[in-house]
Length: 150
Image (cartoon, rainbow, N blue to C red; front, top):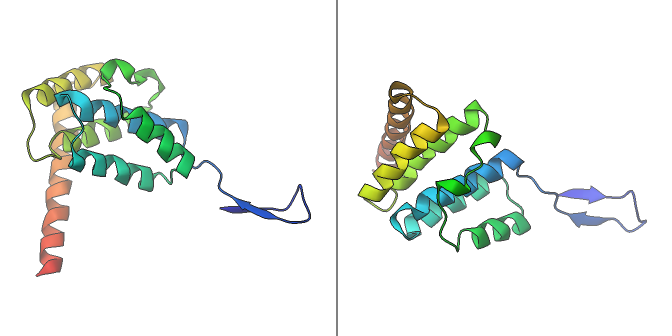
């Protein structure tokens, strides 16, 4: 939030949009991945909510993206040409984690990941490195949480 004192003698607080267009594209893309098996499960919603928090989404942005998530989405809804290299890696690594967020990776989710790799322009070696890195990071984070609870 920022204090707006320029226009009036009585300043008001208001929240500016904090998400960049690319961040919105990444969240929209993850929503499409979440729909791969025909529904968005609660753990997948939690991952999407986590990204909204990570990207400092305003209430309006959060509402817009949650509304977007109510309708089935596909890879055709992803603006691939508007993602830079970092955005493409973020999308693939988190798509791999999101596809397993509900405890299993369905055949449709596996197929979608393969198609996503192709559309993002990664070769098999790059994709394996990105996906494995994401999974290794998730396992390490999970192990730290377990140790912290002990």
